[in-house]
Length: 488
Ligand code: PMP
Image (cartoon, rainbow, N blue to C red; front, top):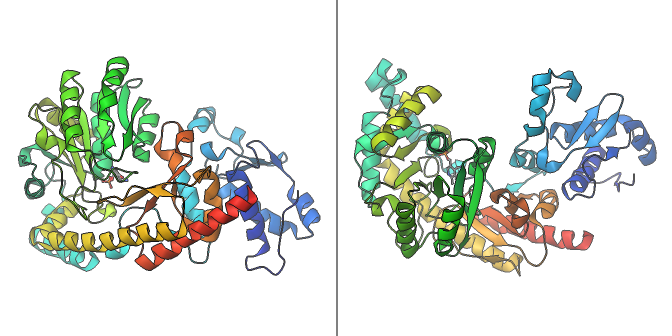
């Protein structure tokens, strides 16, 4: 095997070998199932020590890109269906019930990407959600302290199953300020909105049922639907969100049990559903008796224009279940989200929440409520909108300069920019080049049911980095494209 190495290069020899093999595997040049040369053989070919090769192989194995069988050799794994490290055991070493799980025991692709990105001396991740440097650490610390002093043991008990009552009231209050009038009794606090999604699915759908989503859509919703054994049908999107006009025949033919949508600053495209389409979607949902799950994960992060009413606010018939979160405006590690629902659905949600995790942390709910109530939240939100707006503009300018030929629909809010790559560039094949340059992004494939549909796109997060880093990150992306074009 010929691997180009530079003996006095910037990176150590094992890193160079590891990078070369990683790129070959991720670009498909080394196909799944290929046997890599034995470490002794490769060491001799390259005139380096065997330990150097062993180090490179061990790192690839830890990232799930190759699998090593003692006595049989090292094999390339399918990067799309990476098997997690097997704790030093060969596949056959596990009990049979564990072996049955192996084909479905996948790595999350972005975990591997993040871990490789760390290897660049100063990587810039255009991924993730909000900017951790903007977490209001001191204010939140104060809020926790206040709550502990004020509530003592009550703060450490389980508390109300539906969520801490004052936080439910405050949530209703925040929603009212956004034009959505709900009673605190319709609010259920959840452990992040990811749990809200899981609860709704488990109540309304069974294995084999169909869910309708936007295409593209939130990757971890797709992952959840896959793990839960659902059939996913999708409706294409454009600059005004889901193309609701083409939906009726899909609803008639596929009979989905639920429509899952992000009407505001959608993940991954950043677009919002137009008002006319909001009305039409509701009308269809009523006509075909299909509930809508409205995921409003960043509705508050608006940088220009005025908001359209939430689907839930337009819904006079009780078709819509609304979910939201404090993760994006504040801190994802709080794990506080909420559902708005009524009637039997609300009761079923409470019941399922109880058997799922008993309750969302009372201390965190109380501290969040204390933090919000003194108005710090509104101030933090206003400031975040200013900061993120500047970052969005910095990214649009940088894309103009460094990625000629790429197209993007400028988002009016949220966290993401959806980039259509120039010509026939595959975002999956480009990724190793980008990582080598020290920039990370989310390749488009993971947001589609058919990954191939996403090859020509990538998602950039503009909220996590400073304007300077955004500028540099996008410049690196431009360099990665040049290298890709030379080598492809
Ligand atoms: N919905 C969307 C669209 C998201 O991007 C996320 C965050 N990954 C969630 C829901 C879940 O977020 P959380 O559980 O932190 O509220």
